[in-house]
Image 1 (spheres, rainbow, N blue to C red):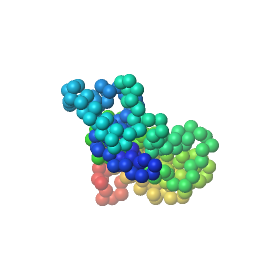
Image 2: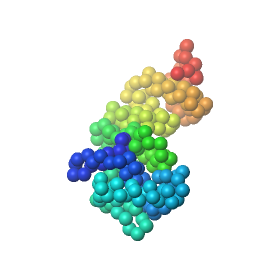
Image 3: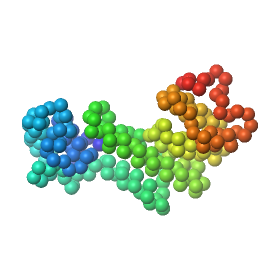
Image 4: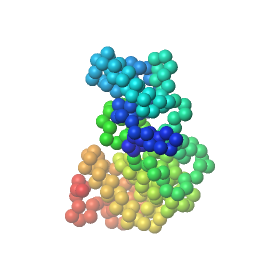
Length: 239
């Protein structure tokens, strides 16, 4: 689910019709659904009779191409218990990082960080689970970076903070953490550059300025002069 759709059976990729991919994806991402609801979600512009026929045809294709992925109990469709999603592993990492105080952040952030669910799909029902994944990923990355920073591992903390910024570019907490890590590493110039990039992006995309807490951090790093001013030749709204 994270990245392009791919189904594997016993380690081997199983090509599937796109209609079957969509059925598996919506059932996996939204949980058990009644047949009528599945039809309405997958074919929102079709009449109920037409969407029901589409669903029956898709279930028939699924039975031929890859039986065993979905269970049907009365009127309800659900992903079979033995099916494992890459999203499950991602959420396991998120939960362990956020809630297990002793959970160590070892090595680089997970490879799936920064990737979206099923890129290229335009389905409206994908928006909510994709936003949820990105928000949880950013929260876990910030938590990992903060723990590493508190333990004095500033070099190891930086990739997590920068990944959090990549996932949630407008998050002030993520950008403030990245700036603090630059400073704690003895690199105030990169801290200031990061702040200025963030401020220009906020101004350009949202028409707002960083909050007072973040500006206070920069003033503490540069108690002399005017660190909040842009370098000569660069405007606050420039690229």
